[in-house]
Amino acid sequence: MTPSDPHRVRLARPARTAGGPAPELPPPDETAAEVPRVRRENRAATQRVRRLAMLYVVALAAIYLALAVLARRAPGGTSSGGSADVLVSGAVALGLALLGAILTLASAPVAVEVGDHALVVEGLFGHRRTFPGGPGRTIRVVRRYAPGVLNTGPVESVEVRAGGVRRTYLLDSGTLPESAPPAGGP
Image (tube, rainbow, N blue to C red):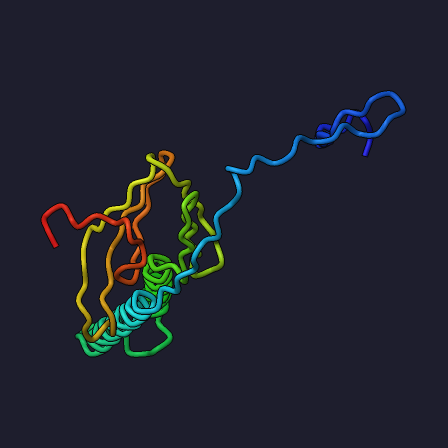
């Protein structure tokens, strides 16, 4: 790497006095000490999205197979399984199944860490999103789902707003204690 390289990165370092040690940092503020966050697993909502994704993929596969059978039996339809139309429509169905399953699974985080100063949401693929605490953060329940075939415990669709960012997640009921009831009532 040369000094004139456009990709050169300059790292900020503490200033040193001539020949002396680096200046000492001020002691940390006692009031800014991080309060430990409580980690809450998101089991019922994760179960709900997994079952919903499976239901979506199975329904899409059934529709595709029904249409493929109709295409083969129709007058002038494809008589061989290697037809380009069947392969293209199969690739489109597979792409839709994967995309729909990923989008469905991404809506329910694996766990949520709740603290006074921050809310950390851990996604299915390991991504962590931090929402700062304070008066700028609002949490609102958009919809509640009762236990049933898709989930064994109650689940809530929760909207989190903080710092100009708005996200909606499926969470186990009661995961976020400060959440307000839905606009139209419970």
